[in-house]
Length: 116
Image (cartoon, rainbow, N blue to C red; front, side, top):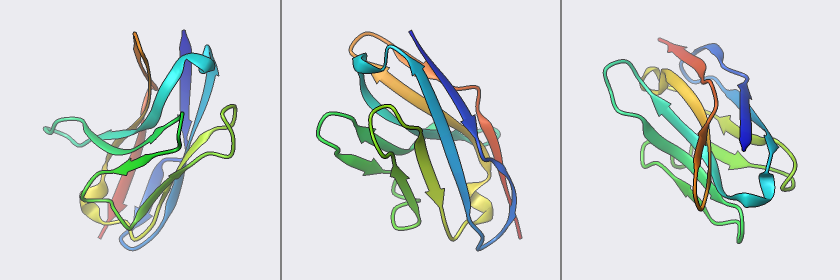
C-alpha cells in the first residue's frame, strides 16, 4: 500500500505561482509512476504532469507545458509541482497520483483557485 498526502494549494491571482507537494509513504519501491492530475467542476480528471520513476521520463499535459514543472530530489522525497504563470483556467482540485504494476493510488486532493 501507498499513502499520498498533498499540500500547498490555495488562492492566487492570475499570473502568480504556487508549489504543490505530495508526500508518499508505504511500499514506494513498487511505484512506477508518480504525478499530478486535476479536476475542475463538471470536467473529467486530467493528467497535469507525471514522472516515470525508473528512468526519470517526464510528461506534461498540453495546457501546462512550459508553465508547470514536476520534480523530486530522490525516490524517498516528496514530489513537487511548481506552477507558474497561473491562469483562471488552472482552477481545480489537484490530486497526487502513484501507480504500481497492480494498483493506482490517489491523495485526498488540494484546491487551487486562480482569480482574475
